[in-house]
Length: 175
Image (cartoon, rainbow, N blue to C red; front, side):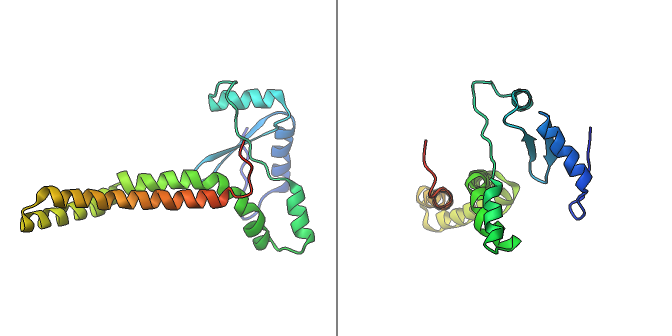
């Protein structure tokens, strides 16, 4: 069964049908530009079994569930927050905890393996090392310096990512 919901004009009836499917133990998948989200009722054993089957995970391996209580949203509205402030102060900080590791991985792949880097950054760095090695007649030193520059870029990126993840996880107890 397929439902289509327009972002600019969501149909209330269609959303209620999707909510009924989740409530009755079904699974609702919703595609976005970057990933597919799955909605399921965690209190339904049938829905969780179906979720494990869809994900292809062994049943002894836990599936992380992300849920934001409506109490926080209701409290923010009662405090007079508008939608933008509610998003910025309540929903966005909760989302960053889960989004930053994936974004950091994508950034590291971008630095190390994408066509943009292989076309612009790395050949430019190696060309400059080649020019310097020919001028100084110290190829090992120049190429070693170029590799250190490349390593420095990745270490700085990893450090920034780690600090951002630590900041996003502040106030969260570790298990």
